[in-house]
Image 1 (cartoon, rainbow, N blue to C red):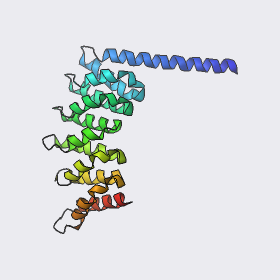
Image 2 (spheres, helix red, strand yellow):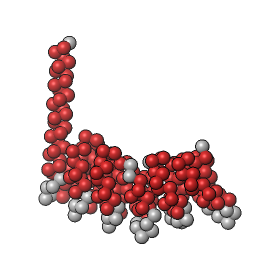
Image 3 (spheres, rainbow, N blue to C red):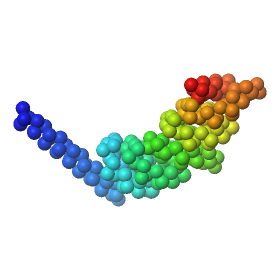
Length: 213
């Protein structure tokens, strides 16, 4: 029995070592001159999830790669690593302004998974930015639940944005009681007889209920 246990532990050690070697190899591949190889490396690091933690710096650097898909996959990989990738919050925040919306959207989702509410709030409130990327930022804030409390003021302001107000109301509802400062604005919308968008008013009413729980 003892011999079997030692063998099992040895196998686990080899697996862990192999995993570390794989990540190191992918980090090296991420700097290859061939964009297809860089894309594959970033994608595989994303599939590795938290095990790709040693690649955080390389992935953050890849957010400035000239290839769209490398940048997108790098952002997604950082999101899959999760809260351990907090050191990448600044480069991901910069990636929110990427000229390609696919990259900006991936960066928004990643910041949500890492738990960075402040840059998402600032981006969501910037009407100069791409609407689809701002929508993704608001959705990411909603998925953060109560941890997105710092974004409540920005989300409250977004209730006036015709393009994003439904998503903003949904996010406030997901934040729950921590979004109580938005109740006055939400209630005003619910009571507004001139507001004809029934779907919006329904989402607002549901948000009010969740916040008052």
